[in-house]
Image (tube, rainbow, N blue to C red):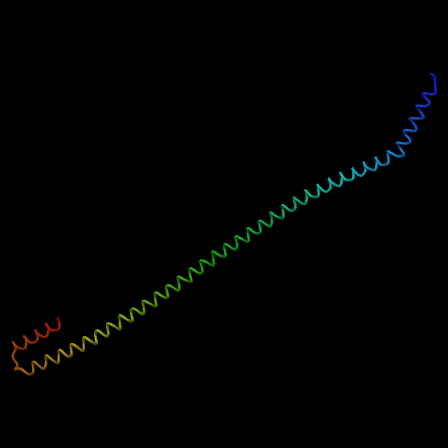
Length: 158
């Protein structure tokens, strides 16, 4: 094997190439790869954190939604109870009003009946006095007396 200057020149060139690469090219390249690796790791960690936050926020939103539905149901139930109470109160007031109006109407009818009775008594008394005057002014005759009473009854019915 023959070691000649070409081989020796290639070895020196190769050693010089390795030294320049190790000295000037490799450190920035290594730094860039380390930075890129760190960015990728940070990105993956952020994605994982974001995924966990998403799951947590979905659970929270589901809990809030469930709670709001329950509150809504309670509000609706309260509204139904309140409406039923208002309706019952209105019914009770209406029944009281009907009872009061019926009592007032019965009192008015009773008053009118009493007034009619008093008026009728007054008229009957006048007719009786009038009939007695006629009977006393004439002779006492049974047939005339019966005829006058019949006229008196006919006068009452008209």
